[in-house]
Image (cartoon, rainbow over the protein chains, first blue to last red):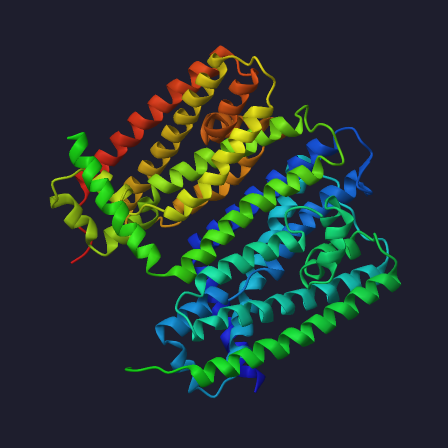
Length: 265
Length: 262
């Protein structure tokens, strides 16, 4: 049962590695952002020992860990799904004895594997090149909580993006909403700046959405800026959001399929 | 001749507008996304300055000048040279063969084949914000500084044009490198902040090799009165060299072109 998804994963891994120019392009973009933000925060910190409660080491680690999370959490298959629904290519998957969600998840994991490895390499090179000091969690439980939190974030993004991309069942113009969703999500998740810079009222409002649970809170778990009990609470909230979006994405998918029709071969 | 090219541009712009209006939901989504990116980033910078007075010696107003100048140069290039993003496809699909036999410069035809009206709509708030920020700058900056700012902004757009011509030349020469323009776009991200914040090597690369500093930081510095005359001359000379080299590269690429499609 699991073997066919494993095969899809292996083929997709080869395919991702074969399209080296696309991979390079994605990574150059990531490196430009990480270098910009690293120096931005470095300049902001100046000679101050801390900023917004982050020590210099923690703040710069936020940027570096954020690059790794961007690579693992925010690589998705949304645009491919939009293309496959709009062009009708999805029909060929629907008649195969596989779950489309499972198949897409396997492809997504392959992409994440490559991007995660590249992100580690970039961060390693950057640390070596500029002599950055990185904050490493002291406790083993922090590593465990952080790992689980990142895995849940990644699944959360997968199902959220899947849900938004499924709009393609109703309109061939779903690329616009998807673009809008991805941009808004990245800002609201704390991908460019820690959300602590925002006024408290805005932080509270954002905490009621799933977005900060995808990057901001996982990094705060990593930086040990919250007690273990609080980190467990964050994991609980993540799990609730994940359950909601699994349900919502599946419901939208089923509705979309009932609405879908394809002509020709 | 200018009149003819103006008419051709208007024609292509009308076609681009019609194409974008044919997909209202998609275009609206992209427009909202672009506006969101602009306002969110600006809002975050303002939010950061609630916690500090200066950054690398620059005040919030200075940072706003840098950020808005970046957007002005970047979006203007997006509006006018959007066609380059489809250069490789134009070559591989064979459209470029048609461009060559039309009574119009193939470079002009390729670069201006698409006019991004979503960026036209996005640049309006940027211009408005520039007006607001300029009004808050200390009085008595003098017309000379504003004139130099305008000159160097156009100079930055000229360098952006040269980079786009290089990319178009690469597409004609190799029928590949679709991603080159996106690498440029990604590196441009570094121009959102003044290049002074970067470390020594990165700063020199951004000034001498991939001259994003010259394109977006120099105009802002000129306005703030912290750009030396020597760097001003360097910026103007660099633009001239880049434009001449890119046009030479383009002409050579076209000369070697042997048609890659049917």
